Image 1: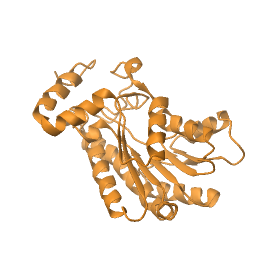
Image 2 (image 1 turned 90 degrees about the vertical axis):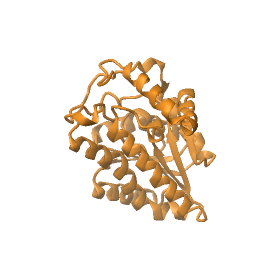
Image 3 (image 1 turned 180 degrees about the vertical axis):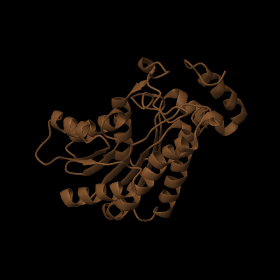
Length: 268
């Protein structure tokens, strides 16, 4: 990875921050992208890196012009792109019948359209480098999670988008990875949206029993290095995907019962 150029969206915290640290430690040149520019700068100052190894770009991936600006800044600074990791994302937790339409739209704008925008503008450079396009998705992209209508919808859409991108470019040397962590100890649940679009605040799940962001980042980096098409993490995640292929109605009930056990679950 020495001197390879890696763009990571949503890199101010969680899996994104862990990916930044992972790739910097391997000598890559890393472009940090997130809405909170102050957090990006603080992270960049904290990391011990060689000169000109990092570039921070304030980016709201739901805005097409911000995504274009991100790629243009990366090219201007480093001259190319080897890996694009679409990690930026938000979640939600509310019954669909109680959820405002604007919440679903925001989830799609950030999770799905953010991936599409960044990939579109980076694609010419990735094709030239025979590089990698990655989306940090979720098991929710394989199995709908109750109370997460917008989240699951956006992840299903990402899976379809990346699958087509992989097939279209299978003879051009482009690597496309769909990475699906299971429940991960990160702040995505704390910033998840409620039915009215406000942040839900405290996570309803026990973070201590989850895979850490650092572990997820290492798995993703390894999958990119091996140019895998798909990465599904945790035993529970793998079992859910496998069972759903053969026993979808059973998994419907299992998923419902599992999610209903959350603190203050919106359904019982």
